[in-house]
Image (cartoon, rainbow, N blue to C red):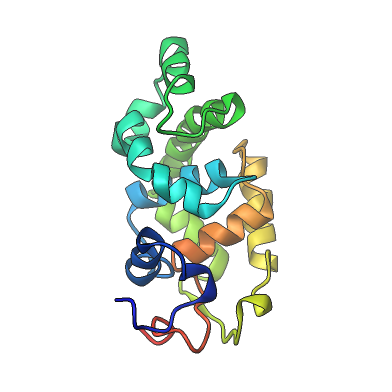
Length: 187
């Protein structure tokens, strides 16, 4: 696994390499995974992705394995428990947004039949395949992430700016931003 040419951001630790090789950029249509990454990308705001990857299992444990229905019912005692949990990012605004975003996620599922059907509309239902030669060619946002962010904000979602939306789109395989020299580019 270590002798492969990867995107420059995935040259660090083994966890980053495995995430890059097995998950990042692979199209996701499972609402549970879409919710997990919506929360994790929001939690990353102001932090490194490596920090969030290292806390991912802590999030799964603390948030009932990202069960959106359970999270949507969290009350004050659970919020206090989460704010005391070193396995996650203990930021009150991010913890509160996790709960409110869970409630809004369920509303979107009811409106569209699934969150998948809603979120993939921003790329016309299929991945956008880019041909970036280096990480410096990758933008932090696009018109698609702008539209996604604007619509999610209109619906009340938090920690969902255009840069977070673009990172989400990359992670969920809505865009292929593996650099052209990366072994995952043509996967």
